[in-house]
Image 1 (tube, helix red, strand yellow):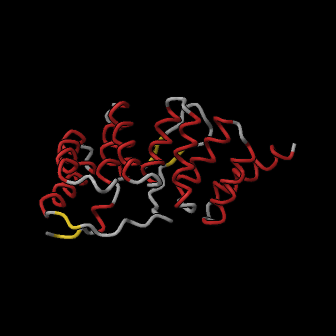
Image 2: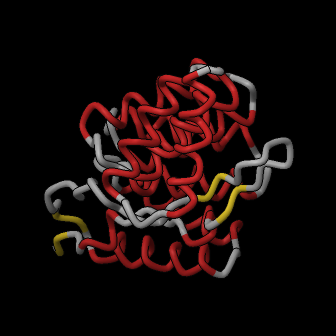
Amino acid sequence: MNSFSAIFFKVFVLAMFAIGLSACVKDVKQDTSQSGYEAPKNISVDSDVEDAFNSALGHLKAERYDEAIALLLQVIEEEKRVAAPFVNLGMAYDKKGDVTNAEKYLLEAVNVDLAHPVANNQLGLLYRKQGKFDDARKAYSNALTRYPDYLPVIRNLGILCELYIRDLPCALSQYEHYQSLRPDDKTMNIWIADLSRRVAK
């Protein structure tokens, strides 16, 4: 039996570098930073399961989603105690345009770990695309209960509040929190200046 290396808990994000918003002036980027997120404690598993997981990550990086999905389905048959394989399945299905299975496995991930930041971030993005703005906000809020400094969720909650829910104070609060963690982000500085003027009117 081997213990999971950190990579087992790693959620694949390389294929999700950018998510465009054709209807909006703001672009929503999938921040690959894991700031504020700590992997769960090590769990003993068979080396074959870890190998399959690592191979699945390789397929995801190469955008071979069917191969990745097949391996990840094998992984979750053997190991259901951690969220990462479910998150990766959800992301792979989302890239294939299979919204039903994307949501199914992201929900499985939050069943394992309600506050999992990557799972909730992806679920929030999925719900936002479907127009389920209250569900998206709930997903982001779930992540922030335990990972209040997780940058992708902070950013995406701010965008949701500004552009979709039209809750400008919520958006400004999220952007300012993001800025406090990433003061060198020039784009965020511009967004805050613009939104501050609109809130003040």
